[in-house]
Image (cartoon, rainbow, N blue to C red; front, side, top):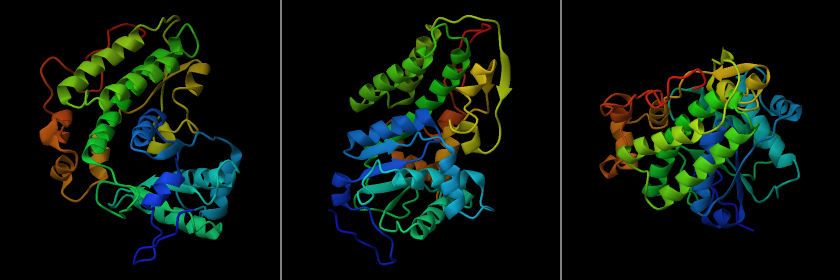
Length: 320
């Protein structure tokens, strides 16, 4: 068993030995995006699992260890992680928890501290917590991501956006129930295989992949009259977590089509690295090697393409 190692401030580190032995758990918020991230981390030798649990016990665990005045998403995220640790499915002494940290003024910067406090209350302080950020906060010797992995992660976020936007428009009308989800799985596998070969990691190739992704969903047989479009707005976790509003699941069953604000992925990535802004992000992921810059993806888009995540490629029909 890996030895518990602490830094000079008393923070429990995720060590190289833990990378070999531990399973890393992280909460569900964006199933497609986080699913891509999980598979990218697996190629780097990590044992990871995205939690998909959804039951009342998660809320109960959150209320037990997080003050009820704390924002509800924090309560749910922390409750889901602790519920998983206590479930008996994992070796409690060989599990680590992963959570994002912006490093800025957003309350999400404090989730990691609330999580550690909750673990201590639950008698689980021996479980390491890994911070994912682009600010260099809380480094861990066993969790180091190279430039190539960071590039894949950035593009995975972009691909996740177009997949979600197109899938949400097709799923309510699919003739064969479940075909949209099967297409998501197939598209993800194709993208990851290509990225592992160094493909799909430039703006030009990303745009070409966008065309192929839209074509894949367009090929799904659809039927039925146009449905009521249900707008889902609010806090990001509430909008996109399948355990909450379930934009892709509950609404179609009830006769509606889910809709929501488009994720602005580069904006959120910049939130993860506030020091230095866009230039810092470019240095982190290597813009000179073809990684799209925030300016490029949000403003300077090649002629003939719509920057709004797929609308320029979607055919003008009542279904898409």
